[in-house]
Length: 498
Ligand SMILES: Nc1ncnc2c1ncn2[C@@H]1O[C@H](COP(=O)(O)OP(=O)(O)OP(=O)(O)O)[C@@H](O)[C@H]1O
Image (cartoon, rainbow, N blue to C red):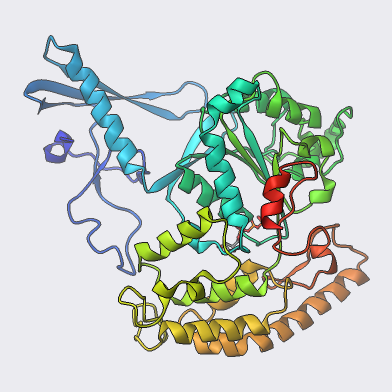
């Protein structure tokens, strides 16, 4: 709270950028104009010098602070340690100081979600703290957000329930489906909503083997989200429970670029993964999210309840999603606690069937809280206030009418709208032509691919210019709201949403 290095007369210069966890203090006025276009990413900050001792008063006690920097022996990373000395006989002062520092840190993280990944030495590295993404920014079919978030909240509150029944206190979610349908975004939103940090376990990381995976999982904190993206990737070589990975031929190893290892160098086996997930050492209280585009390629042992308790399919955009995406894209974002509370309401009520905006009279034109105006014009900064909420709703409907069900991914629709950031009329009118062009381009690409005798992998859509081609098999598992729950599992929840 009293960074005395802010007033120091000794100054050192560095070209380093300081991340979220640094002890640096920004120069006054550095962040004044957050919207400035050509803002330099390199800021000037005060940092306690590594060679000096600073002194300050803390609660009427004399205190000194020294920062010591040590080279960690193995990988050349630098570790910083702050040494505090307080002139007092009262131990509580130190305890209070640490608690205060922790509280300030935690308060500072309230709007953030931190992401950790494992490094090559198999330790968890803090990589970033990101602003939480609002649940409202994800558009899924009615019921899906509510199901996932409700289930995870319920799980986190049920420790005793699990303990009483002797069931391991952990829960796994498998989000599967076409690329660009919002799987990763949803996980990030959920982690933010639940106040949990995300630990990304990259199963395709070079050098990851059964024992290092188990080590990583054991080192997870008690409450966190563990994320395994593209869980099928680790097993593209059809490693089964018994199969031992093939040894790497020595010439392949020699010819591979430095640092890059051929995929077969991955020593992870399915049984290693299963053991890590539910073996003796598996972390209690963790939420595991796994994503895949190739659901059918996963081993049933991996998908079974207890490992992946809830399976949710993400499909290409429905008309409902297209309409909502359009509305949310063009309506001002910074409006309203109202919007969030509305969304929250929907989440808890497991989403009513229809467009929440239309149903809720709070959003009707004329309401004092209504975000009346939308962005039009050529630039965000312009924002001439020309369109009412009602106009946007009509345009959104026109847009959705032109989009065939489940043909385009949400990412591709978002990509299309990005080209019309501030021109909703043109976006609504031009979508038909865009789809036509994209189909032609896609077909051409397919023909090219066919002539080279390359086939798309099962369950995957070929991607063309950011858009997905029509995919006859994409809705084969479940019809309706784009949700499929494992047979025999959570039938009550299944009944809720089907
Ligand atoms: N349902 C959705 N609602 C809002 N935005 C979405 C949705 N789906 C995708 N997007 C947008 O598309 C982009 C890609 O989404 P995301 O990475 O979450 O998809 P994914 O399903 O995880 O894709 P992949 O399987 O390729 O990893 C993001 O910018 C996201 O904002």
